[in-house]
Image (cartoon, rainbow, N blue to C red; front, side):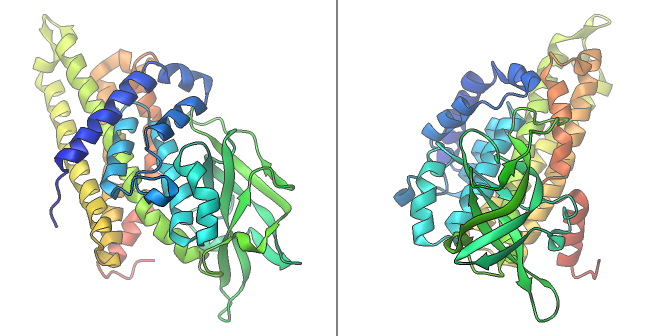
Length: 388
């Protein structure tokens, strides 16, 4: 399946690029150093319509396609990875599960504020003992008097503790199946619910101005109607959510690769050594040429996977394409930051240059939404190999 972005996509790209250049770029270094989460920028992104790109008009969205969301994530991530992940998680992990699995009442109650960027929602999956092995979820929930009672803990949850976070959807064991495997369901827990504690923000290597917290649930009680989707289908819902998320993370990685390419070309033309621009040296020029290859390959894989989702491609084929795009793009992004830092030499090690921040931001791309090892396992299984 071939795919190319339309003129409308490219026009939209310029709108987001202009927003990122004027609203985010002048401040991102300061926000990163201060570990500041810029709520006002998030709300401005909402006014621009970025959170509602794939949501129906009835909830305030524009009813657009998945490639449009990827374009927005790419362009924001090209300037600020931490703001790019805020958008990716807000839509992919906050809005989309409700949009896909929620009842009409749940959608009407929750989506308008989320789509408008006036509120954020998190998705509580990862736990101290259950990362890649999500089936080992230890958080539990049972029904008592028409309410879910939730106990457990989550970690590394994006958009979960900001001043505008309205809820977190969590996976929890709600029973045991006949074969002994856990029954896992997803439950929406509003911010401020008694017993729901948002732990202090993490001191992270990168993504310093994104909102990331651990969460604890101590006899948290919410209405039985807060079940999201079918009881016992939480694990399957989360797997489907991650398929989309992998493509979106790939788009974030594409933005990072493109930023490294642009910065390296500019620097290689300006910086002189032995009387010539360093870009005249094959050792430098060839590395930058490799960045161009990585950018084009990652972009092609990412937008092909995005187009497959919208075209209703067979799930097996889409899952394979999503994992391929995520694996290649995330690892290419890590390589790209290493190359760009090398091109910048000693300056690349200084925080005043963006490549230093990108170097710190890149590594998590190989971990979030399924590690590189998980992607290789899924790709191998897609080829029919009985890998464990």
